[in-house]
Image (cartoon, rainbow over all chains, first blue to last red; front, side):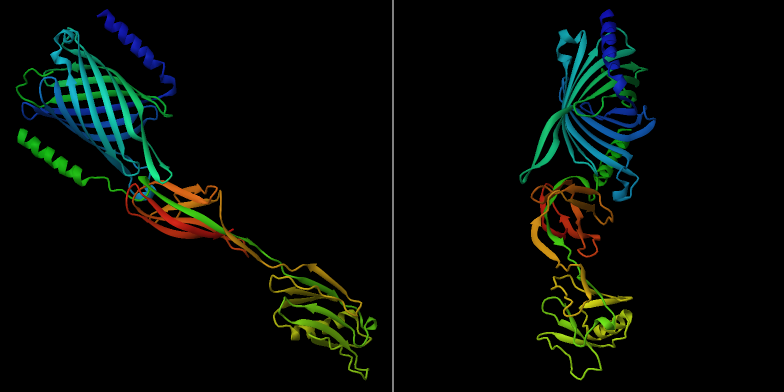
Length: 241
Length: 253
């Protein structure tokens, strides 16, 4: 247990060192999960985003995320997300809000079959291709890869985790070279999240995490405080993680 | 419960499909507009201004004359003075010139002679000059910008001064204009949304545009008044990832 505490202190110290030049955001979400069949489950939720540093509302999002379980270790994950925020291009279309549609498709692998490793922690790897279209911004294509390490501790209430995610934008640069449009990609963001899930009871979970958004561009590094309440609508739960 | 949820999800999916971003003209696209700004260099000319200081009758002799000219191809004049006491006609009959005769007396003051001269000239002019009289000074200002052969006091002792030399307007050749601003208006807007400067070869490009209609304009300068007004070109981008060539946008500068 001591080793977890030391690790936590090291990671928090790392985050705090960034805090002087960044802003703090909050994401508060309510999610629901339902197993439609033995293999197909759907996660859906509403999320609001706030800029705590500027004390202003940022975005409102709705997502729906179906997953199809091939076996215990492999899952196909798809997602749709609609986000709404204040339109800074009001003069162009006369609308006070603007929105974006995001679609993604990916694969989730978990380490449940690696029994030896599984006794200490569990690894979850999610790789997905993501497309998002905006009204007044260029379309964005991303390849996102996230590794989550979930510690296995004796407590049934707390499930701490740490995740690392790289976001590779395929069309980060778009410019004219002679007579041809050229796009170039780059890893424009790396996210580190440290958090924990709290099992409130069999059906309800609370997830609190602190995420560091380390942009690889000129954007300032940001902190995001994630708070998610999740309810499992599935009746007669059996062996769910 | 499951069937309700399935229906809800299906409904959400349908809504999401209809809720696609309908893009409007503006930033965020993958197309471009490209053109070349060309201009004609215009140099405004000058009007010729002649100031003639008229002397009194005692200083003029019967048959004296002075000369002034119109722009090339126009009338050439001589103004001559006639005293009624003389039997001879006194007209110098200068070949190729139109004579303007002014009756005078030796006792006339300079302002009286100037009045009579101005009256005679105003009857003869055919729009080449505008004239004004101030005491004994007659000013003739050419109505066009052109080079004019200088006036001459002839046989009189009048002071003939060219206070402003006439000069023609010069229209240069059409050349590409570098480092000049070109503006872009999205859709039916009235004020510009983007602006770029032309490169060394006069080429300008607006990038990252969505499908739709746009207006490109540059400011042209009125050669006479110096006033700047926009010259518009309407452009339609019909496909993503394309460059719409608008050719030349011509201005005066």
